[in-house]
Image (cartoon, rainbow, N blue to C red; front, side, top):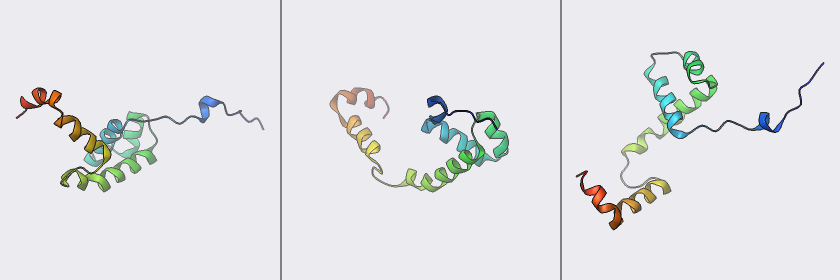
Length: 93
């Protein structure tokens, strides 16, 4: 038998942005395409799509919770409250 040596590049896992995961999970929730079709379309393993869909459903209620739910949300609020951001923020209201 011939075995390939595992190189450094083969050992590295592909990192996927959270926005991409959300996009794929939302597509899966729509149900317009099967997970297999989505996996081929987005070039990811079907198991990942199932995991991302499950995570999206689990965390969806957090969107409607009051107050910051994470450090990132807290940081975003702190930045938005800074005086140098007031002029940018004022046109949104």
